[in-house]
Image (cartoon, rainbow, N blue to C red; front, side, top):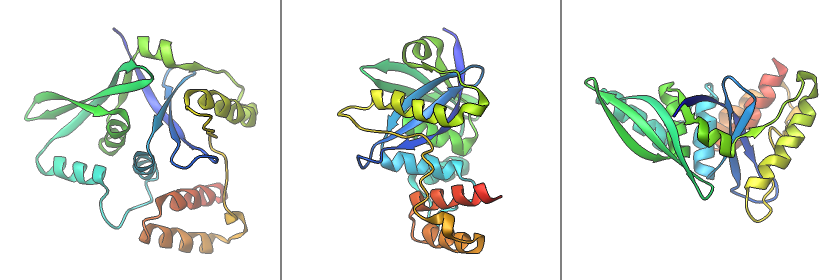
Length: 209
């Protein structure tokens, strides 16, 4: 079976139900998206790995795993989302130590959080993408429509009417703050380990640059 490489498009969150997150993966050479429901902790860990400038004062679980692996010369070579059963994705982590490869089963959210920290590629099988991938095509000028339609599509994969919005742009009043104030708020959020707030602040700062 042929493998398809994926990249992370972003993490979406529910504004109507706490703890509902979805990780959106894109095929590298195509337009299909693969939405995967993940937990709040994993969403936070992935968001921190994506936001390179946010450095937690203490290592998170996935950071600890990375430090442990580095100490013992273990490298993650790649992550493969290899199975989809009843809406649940199953993944494998391909590790290497002393030129010997090992395959470790993992939850997809954990596997991706680790792949980001090791700069390891993420793959899935074409058959899984054919089954669960969402094919959308939009012009670059129609970004707002894409975000709205993404919300509708992801909404369908979540149970019990959970609502997800992609890159909703909610800033919680951060647009009124100056750049210096934003940086101070960011430093405070990281110090308090409020990484969701830190990610929003970083998004607002990025828009200003």
